[in-house]
Image 1: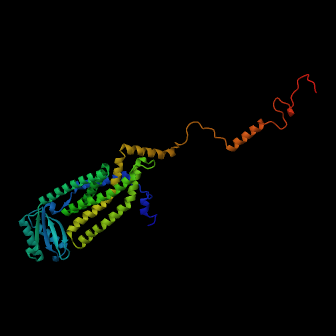
Image 2 (image 1 turned 60 degrees about the vertical axis):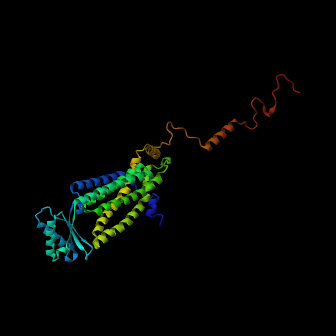
Image 3 (image 1 turned 180 degrees about the vertical axis):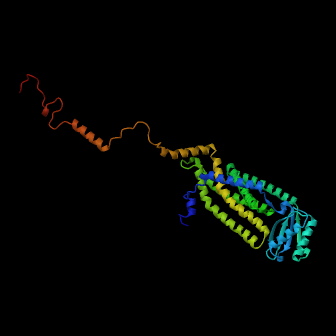
Length: 388
């Protein structure tokens, strides 16, 4: 691979993706989406399957006609009952063209179920025994929900314990917050679009938690590697090192998400769409939505939240202030001495020239007598002395 490729530039931190630095933007987006999801929970609620709301399911051979014709026939049969609450909840093809249609309705008593089955048998020219009826009580769905919540609490507790031992408590809190965000976003998609919630959906919820946790642990492992002894650095803050870790693991997260979504997409669109496997549809749908939201939560939420919590730690906060002050010093000119300007030092050539002029003035001229002596070195004779 070329050294100038995107993956290499991301790993070397040369792509310039400032993800951690824009954490206020990601937090704002997450807050808006969570508020929309909560509003949908309160106003629309969820489309619960008969396993949770209670109801009846009619299995009709697929050879009798199209899914729309069967659904309309069940709806017409329900209108003959003296029950305004009786309605069709969902209808799907199970097992392909050689399989059967499964039409789920609101909860009916045995007499009402027999009336609907007789009407369907008469409508499609079938024997009543060829139409199967199954009844599910809402109490069973409540038990499934309680056990799922218990499993979720146990899972979150084990995740917290592992991450505290493996990393630190701040990373554990950030990872669990990302998991909760992933669940809320996935549940919000189900509520807004109106996807049916079944026991397979609950199983899928628990499955995407493991996928989201794996992605967060990969990123946090790189963050821990980059921030080890970070306070000894005079040029890099904790946020800088964490942002570099996100850049370095971004391509890995993208590859993991794409590779994981491909088989899940095949399970959803081929298994459920072409072959009519209803259970695969419920499982594949929640996995597809959950893995997509897990990518966002692990990259754009978990690490920025970790950095925000770490900057409240005195050691990291003081280090960040020192690095930022060091970066700002050249811009303020702090390295230039303050006070009155000092005279510039003389140039070396000018100094040597001045010394030579001083030496020339001090030196005696050629032929001149030394101070206090006659030329030629003769002594001055005293007055009255005779010449020899």
